[in-house]
Image (cartoon, rainbow, N blue to C red; front, side, top):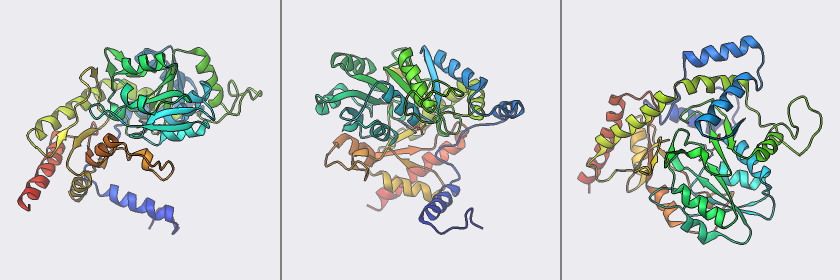
Length: 387
Ligand SMILES: Cc1ncc(COP(=O)(O)O)c(C=O)c1O
């Protein structure tokens, strides 16, 4: 029996997604949760306090310390943190915010929610991120901020972005949603920018299922963002509505999972780096599949294992037939129906057409990784034979 007795388009598209993903012997990613998370969630249930509570405050204070930020505030997801942070900076209709086309839809969507216009820019092919050069091409007198994105955990020259935004009197917003535990020149990636955001979606280094965090050293910004998060009030239980706000709170159940995940963070970080190195070794010498090199000036925790191939769609469909979950990279935002711009961003388009994300869950065994790499090698061997 189907999960839902309904023939709507939404349900049939969900069913086909589920059928496709369900066939994957090696999924592209899966979270590692277990007894530690269960114990803390059980504690929350016993305490009978389900909205934000002591675990939420603990999760925030641990992350503020890890990220070397004065303040950290939990949100229901990174998108909510971005919207609240930008509104707190006063970004509004008539303003422009520069954002890479090569990113998650959360970035242009959250800019649009503030009333401002997302202005797309190309990326640097070496880093997959914005650079001062790509930003400068699209800057206008209405530009208020640069929304820098750590693509797949990687970063460009954050000092250059810091200097550029300062010199041009722009806000530096740091979407490092997938880059927790990474550093650039010895400083945590989330420590850069007027504010930064993290995501705890199920595919991130630590997860709460859904969840996000806003981090900053600016108390005024944090207080404003907190008001947007609490329905326009300073806190739950307060009746005065200071702003037109939202309910962007996380739950105590999720925060408890986050606290448990943090206890295992060293393992996740180590494992992600080991997995990257195993792929590098096993795919060395495969001329059709070049591993992406993360920024050597940073100590990067890879969000995904990325390879560049002549044509991503071919390899993805072959791997899918082998039961391997491989995915494309970010589909360029400037060509999405919601944002359709008559523009060419050559590096963005090239990276999208060639990039493939290979399985990278911490629970993968070396045997799993060998199977993925052998499947990649077989595909290109057969292709050469048939040429
Ligand atoms: C770069 C980037 N920004 C923002 C988001 C959105 O995060 P969330 O789903 O927590 O809103 C993601 C999610 O994967 C992301 O990769």
